[in-house]
Length: 399
Image (cartoon, rainbow, N blue to C red; front, side, top):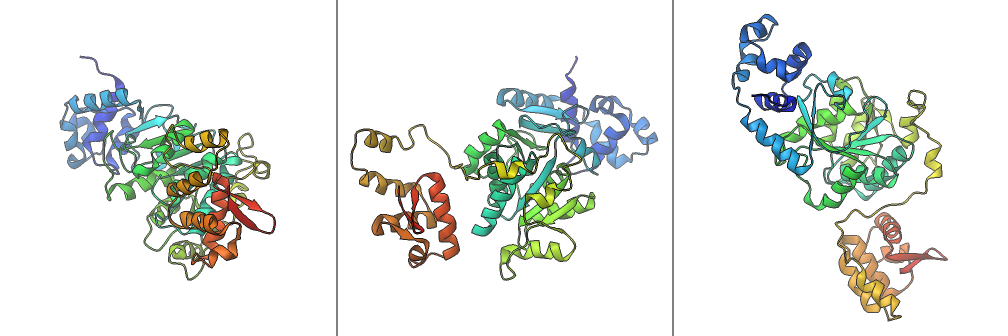
C-alpha cells in the first residue's frame, strides 16, 4: 500500500520525545523520513547509530500517523516536513530539529524575511506591557517578523504590537497548534493566523504541559535572528529562551528595568552578563538593514501612527445598544454606565471615576488610589479603545 510522504514524517516524530536529537541526526544522514522508515537496523548501525537510537524505529505501524494526518486535514493544519521548502532553515541549526511542524496560517519565508524573537514574563508590569507593545509595533512597522510564544503576559502583547504595526507574526506553541492557550487569547490567535502563522511540533489536540515550554523555547530562539527579552524576572522562562539563543550564536538584547522591580531583575542580569542594550527597535534593526535591504526600512517607524488595538474576544453585537441609542438621539448615560462592565481592574476604576467626577486629570484619578504610572497608561489605552476623550488642560472625560 502506498502512503503519502507526510505520514512517514509524522511517524518519525512520534518515535521520539520532542527535543530528542535523534530524528535530526537520522534526517541529516538519510534526508527523508521515508528512507528512515525503510532502513535496515544493520545499515543504521553502520552509519554510527546506537541500538538505543535505532530501537524506537522498530514500531512500523502508520495507524497513529494516519489519524493525525486526518485530524490535520479536518482542522486546516498544514504538515511541514524537514525536507519541505517551507521548513524554516533556521531549525537546521538546532541540535534537535523537529521532524515535522504543524502549522495554521502561512509561515513567512525563512530565507528572505528577518525574524526577531521577543519574549518576556507572564507576570508583566504596566511599563513592561507598554514597552513590549511599542517595541514590537516598531519592529513590524519596519518590516521584521515578530516571533513569540503567545503565552499570557509579555508574549501575547508582543504579537499584538506586531499586528498593530501592520506586520507579520509567528506564534510557537507548547501545545498542539489547534489548542488555544491561554483560552482568552482566541481572538488574538485568529489574528495571528490571518497575518502570519501559529506553529508547533506537538500534534493536534496536545494540551499544554509545563514540560513542553522549555522544549518549545529552543524553536523561538532558533527562528529569530536575534532575541529580545522585554521584561523578565529571575525565574522567567524567557531566560531559557535567551540561553538557547546564546548557545546558537544569536544576539540577545534586553530592555533595562528598574533596579527594585522583581519583573526586571532577569533583564538586568542579562545586561550584566553582556546582553546588548535595547531601548527601541532601532537598536536591533540597525544591524540588519543592510542584510535585508528589500525588507527592512527603519524610516517606516516614524511614518506609521502608533496605536493600541483591542484583542479581547469579540461578539457580533458588541456596542450595538450604544449605536442604536446614539442614532435615536437618546441620552447615553445608562449606556455609558453599562460600558463600565466591559472593563476590568484599573481601567474600570478609572472609567467609573470619570463617570462620577466628570472631567479629571491623571493626578486627580491617582488620588482615587490608583498608581500614577498606571493611571497615565490606562487613560491612554481607554482613549485608544474609544472609552474616553482627552480635553484641553490635560483632562479626560467619558466619551
